Length: 77
Image 1 (tube, rainbow, N blue to C red):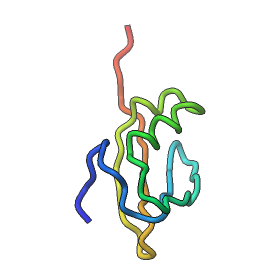
Image 2 (cartoon, helix red, strand yellow):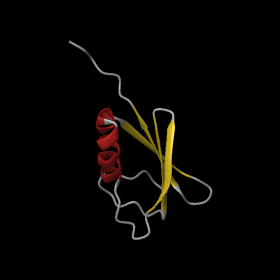
Image 3 (cartoon, one colour):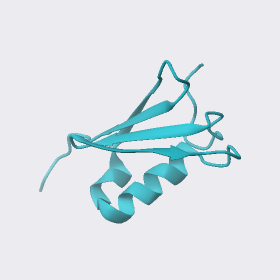
Image 4 (cartoon, rainbow, N blue to C red):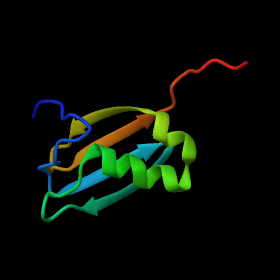
């Protein structure tokens, strides 16, 4: 599977989310309507800084898509 863009629909039936040392899911995606952008927006409801994270993706052996959200280094001041 090639890397998806933020607005591409996720073709995998399950999604596993990793953020800040925590794992969420796997979540079902039976109709393949979710996008990375939607997943990130939902994660940001609980963790506002997740809205500015970098996202990496990996397909697991069972076909689940693992999305890892990593905080970006920023500047202060």
